[in-house]
Amino acid sequence: MPFWGSMTRRSILTPWRNGRDAMASRAAATVRTWQIFGRSHDKARMTSKFSLIGSGLAGGLLAAFLGRRGYEVELFERRPDPRAGNTVGGRSINLALSTRGIHALEQIGVAREVLQHAIPMRGRMIHDKSGALHFSPYDRDPNKCINSIGRGALNTVVIEAAQRYPNVRVRFNHRCTEVDLDTPAAQLVQVETNEIVESRADAIIGVDGAFSAVRRSMQKLDRFEYSQSYLAHGYKELTIPPAADGSWQMEKNALHIWPRKSFMMIALPNPDGSFTCTLFWEFEGPRSFATTTSDSEVRRFFEEEFPDAVALMPALLQDFRDNPTGSLVTIRCAPWCYEDKLALVGDAAHAVVPFYGQGMNAAFEDCVVFDECLAQFPNDRKRAFDEYFARRKANADALADLAVENFVEMRDKTASHAFRAKKKLDHTLEGLLPGIYLPRYTMVTFTLIPYADAASRARRQDRIVYGGLVALLGVLVLLLLLLIRLL
Ligand code: FAD
Image 1 (cartoon, rainbow, N blue to C red):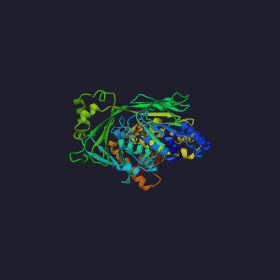
Image 2: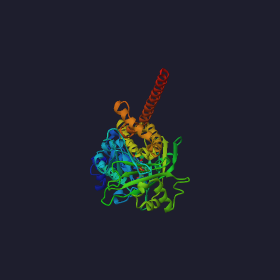
Image 3: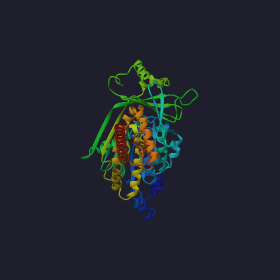
Image 4: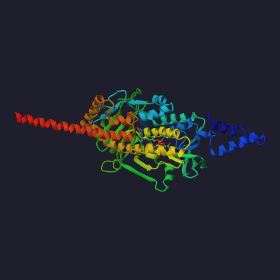
């Protein structure tokens, strides 16, 4: 058990008595000081107290990483404990977990446990309007897959991973309202009692998602950069329930896509035999969430656009009415840290739209890099924070661009023959040029190649391949013309 953990426990169980002997009282005084400032006696490692705001996906995992390093961690979450039967709420019900996320979970020893709850998806199952299906594998290696995982199950695993460390304490129902950057201290409200709580620490980490309260406090800093941009599309979650015998009503090991040019629906499988469908559709416009409101309009829209799915959705109208319409935002900011006192991790630093299935994976990768930077500079937290920001910022920006581009690919291009031909060409080239040619999707989803490098390498590859194809076509035309003249 880390030293501070036993100290804290002792301080609760054994009140410090005065005057036993000089040594004992000196020791007691020292311990009180450590408790006040939340520091460990392990000065060589500059152990500190971290207050983490937000125990979502990244918050839970980061607490586990910091707990494992022996830091004192207090993790505050505005929602109730998800294990008490409360849904995580507000975001998608399930997510695609891929190599980067799995790598992070492996570091903390919970990847196998998580994957037990997951369903592998080996490719895209494209549904056209006639109901015809086309399967397009994600990789030439059929074992490479992304994994559909329930947000609630994953959140529980990471929180429990953190709680295995006695130096990590999790406090649910605590909403952060503001952060005093210089102390640093987080102001929180206990949402059941309205009690105001202050958490002082050596550093406060904002892992509180896209609309981060910690980031909001940083926005008051001079020259802090911030931008947010919303897509014209929103999303609504709907359900395809299991068949009467509990089985899946569509291919289970695929991510289903109904691409319809300017909008689309997708579906990911759940372990209980159901699918969670997400409709991505314009908020405004002649045919949009705004104009399609009555039951008959909704039914007509679905029957026209997704006839094969609507037959499997008995609760469509109620789901459509009851489920909120979410918005899709990209958030960029800089810097992600303030001195050695504050840092942002996950969506709080870089929210991206969900079309590459990488937001959570990137947030988990942040946790790995954050942990590596603390290990690299154990006695200089400011350098560790700066290094973390330097290593991650360009990659988060690249992912934000990739995610928006992939929306166009998913909703429009996946339906075309050209898309399928390009995927086949990608896989053929990957086979012919092992280690030299890697499709962009493969680099982003199935490797740990930094996002920015993956994006620039894919652009280079495209230039060479398409340039080569054009040159080849030119030579063929010339040869043809020569042949015609000779004849
Ligand atoms: P969050 O998961 O948002 O967690 C933040 C936590 O902080 C929450 O628990 C919240 O309650 C808490 N909090 C917020 N404010 C406060 C406060 N003031 N005080 C205390 N606590 C607070 N990513 C993928 O990798 N794959 C996918 O397939 C995928 N699909 C997605 C589908 C949709 C529709 C959407 C919207 C997103 C999807 N994502 C996906 C992205 C993914 O959801 C996020 O990137 C991920 O949740 C980020 O984790 P986080 O911990 O940074 O933030």
